[in-house]
Image (cartoon, rainbow, N blue to C red; front, top):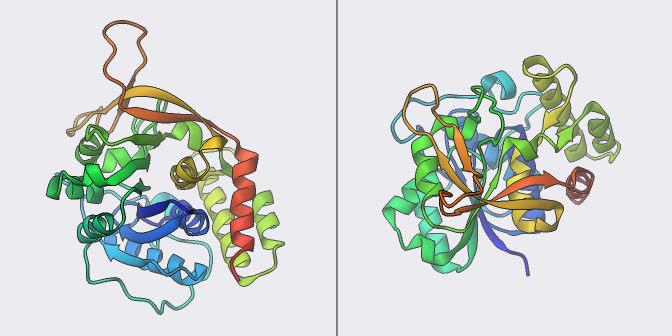
Length: 308
C-alpha cells in the first residue's frame, strides 16, 4: 500500500519532478505551496500545472507568501520569472483550493494517520502548521525535507536556499521532535540531469516527455551559467520524495542538526554535530549522504514514461 504524503513545495523545475515521483510512488493526498523559487502566486500556478500535466487528483492549497520574519527571496536566476523557464507552458485549467496550506495539512492529517510531510521549499507552511496544532506531531509518520548542506551552500558559502530563505521556520521543524529525514546539497548534487538525460526523456516520444526534456535541458544550462563549467543540474527536491518512497537508494547517517537563524552572515547555515565525544548534541535527524543516482534517474524516466 502506497505511503500517504503531503508535498509542500515551491515549483521550480526540480519540484515538478518531486511531484511526479510523489504521485507515481506514493498516495499524494495534497499539495501545498509556499513562496520560494518563485512568488506564491507563481508557485501555486506551477503546482496546479504539474497536477494537470501528470493527471493527478490532489488539490493544491496556497500557503505562506513570505517567511516568518523576513522578506522573501526568490531563485529567478535558476528558475526564471515563471519558476519553470524552458518549456512552453500549456493553458491552465485548474484552480487552487480555497483551503489554505495550514488548513489542508492539519485537516488531512486528522483524516489519515501516518502521513509523511515532504518539504521541498522553505519550511514556512510546515512550521506554521506545527505552531497551530502541536498534536500534528502525534499524527504524522515524519517529515522529509530537502535543505541545508553539510559541507557547502548555494546562496552563501554555507547556506542552502530553502533554509536561508526562512531559517526560523527551518529551526521550528528541525527541533520539533518529529522523525526527520534531511536531503542536503551533498546528496542532491549526486543526482544530476544532463543534456544526454534530456535526450533520453525526449526519446520516450510523448507530449509530457517533450515538456520534461525541455525542462531538464534548460535547468542544466542554467546551472552551467550560474555554478558549473558544464550543463548539469542537480535534482534536489526529488531526493526528499525518494528518501521516503525508496529509502533503499540512500545511505543515511544519524546526526544532531541545527540551523543558524537571524540575519547575520551565518543565516541559514545548517550545522551537523559529528563530534565523537560526550559533548554530542542529541540526534534529531537521518541525513542522506549518498544516493544510487543511476537507479534514481531510472525511476524518473519510468515515471515520465507512465504518464499517458
